[in-house]
Image (tube, rainbow, N blue to C red; front, side, top):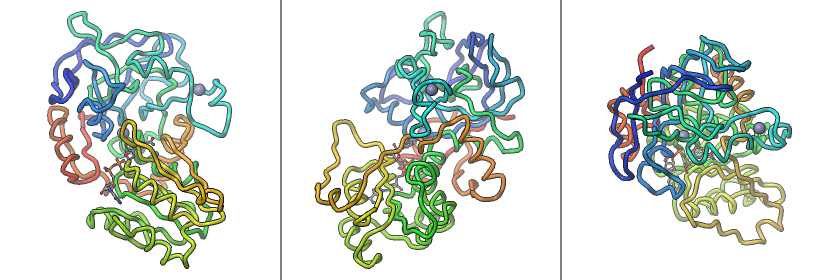
Length: 369
Ligand SMILES: NC(=O)c1ccc[n+]([C@@H]2O[C@H](COP(=O)([O-])OP(=O)(O)OC[C@H]3O[C@@H](n4cnc5c(N)ncnc54)[C@H](O)[C@@H]3O)[C@@H](O)[C@H]2O)c1
Ligand SMILES: [Zn+2]
Ligand SMILES: [Zn+2]
């Protein structure tokens, strides 16, 4: 079939929206009609050429939500009409990692996905017979996409798909960092560095876990206001001296849980150093630049602090995303403030500009329902 999609032709150049061919879903694959898709830093990072594992041409986009249109042979997990959220982090349910409660890093399709192919090593996207690679296994800057059934979460059809799309990446990452990776205990003190989509999600996750005190640190006062709306009890402009101020606020000890959601390794260090002696847990969700390292003075570890990392918030997508969406529908999570701009696919490059200008939290592409 013919679809319209935003193609990364060349690194550092604007995406080009154009008509492509999309082949029918093969065994284990599903054709999804996209209804909404968020524009995320990871798309821009790849488009800029900064990601060493990036490739072109490819159709970007990974924060998608839509409706199952058709299913390939042997698909059992989904049926036409199901509402789905796309998962760049799939859940096969069978690999050694899927069978362990300790991780969400499914091993089933990693290699092919990383190279831009569907699990059978081919693409469904093409242009005049030339294959176009898939991005993050999702390629959701497009009217339709074909994805493996294990990489789609079936969600409550009552959830508006525009909001559901945010659970495909940053929001679940933040919520999950607090709820799954750190498993914040009720009554505890938390510090969240960064008030973008991920940090705000972490603030909401700490609140849902019953944290008593949630300090959010960012450089933008506007974003700190959003953090208050998600449950932050204290806010702070970051920079030098942040660790000292957190220690002062916590009787000299530091916080029970800290979260890093900026991608800056200096802030990661602050997150470690402002975690409490004895049992403080610092969870890293930010993605650092290539080759950057996190400096930790070993004494911080000997005296009881621990460091964890979190990919997609430790959320096993097919099980976890529907549960988070149910909590949204139950009124526990306020998603609307995150949707700052509604744009069309043709405006996708404008979505990147808004993100670079830190104008709002998320631009969401609507494909019309
Ligand atoms: N682990 C994962 O699976 C995963 C998933 C999505 C995104 N990420 C990463 O998470 C990070 C955050 O993503 P986002 O979409 O929320 O980004 P964002 O750019 O919207 O938010 C980052 C925030 O950090 C703030 N900040 C910058 N420097 C700071 C400092 N010194 N002190 C305090 N705050 C500071 C910025 O003002 C901004 O509000 C990125 O590194 C992103 O790549 C990770
Ligand atoms: Zn993303
Ligand atoms: Zn698996």
